Length: 195
Image 1 (cartoon, helix red, strand yellow):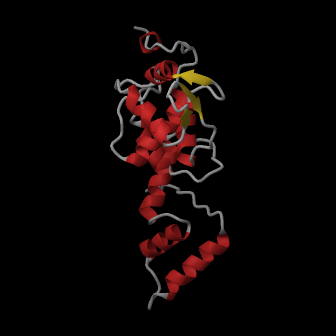
Image 2 (cartoon, rainbow, N blue to C red):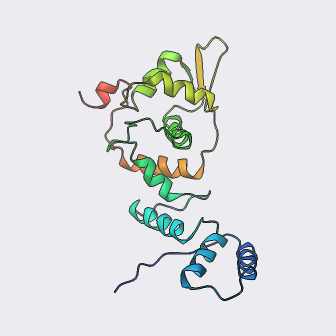
C-alpha cells in the first residue's frame, strides 16, 4: 500500500515545541498515532491533522502554486475557484462573506491602478469580469470593503492600493493562469465572451 506524503512545515519551531509541550503535559499517558498527528498539526496552526491533509491535497490540486509571502489556506482557494468559470469570470456570488471578500479582491485586481473611473466605466469593468448580472452589488461591496474610493457625489471611483490576503493573492494568481492569453481588452462582456 502506498502512503501519501504530506509536507509539514512551521514558521516558528519554538512555538511548535511550546504547543507540543503543553498538549503532552495535559496527558496521563503517551498519545496514540492519530492523537500525535493532531497535536503536531495543531502546533503548526491547523485545526487538526485532517485540516493539514486537506490543505496539502488542495495545494496539489492547484498545481503546486508558488509559495505566497502570507500564509495561504489552499483548501479555501480550491473552494473559491468553483465560483469562477474556465475564463476566470465570476459566475456566482458566494453566500459567505469571507468568500465574497476574496472574490472582490479578484475584481479589484482587474481594475486599473491609479486611474480615476466614472461610475459607468467602473460598471463596464465589473460587467466584463462576471456573469451573474449584478454589477451594482459588486460595485457597492468594493466600496464598502474599502477596495475602491469614490467622490462624495459618486461620479468618480478609484482603486485603493492595498495588499490582498494570502488566499486572495493565490486566487488571483490561479485565475490569471486560467484566463486565455489572447483575451480581448474590451470591456463589453459580450465582446469578451465572443458573442
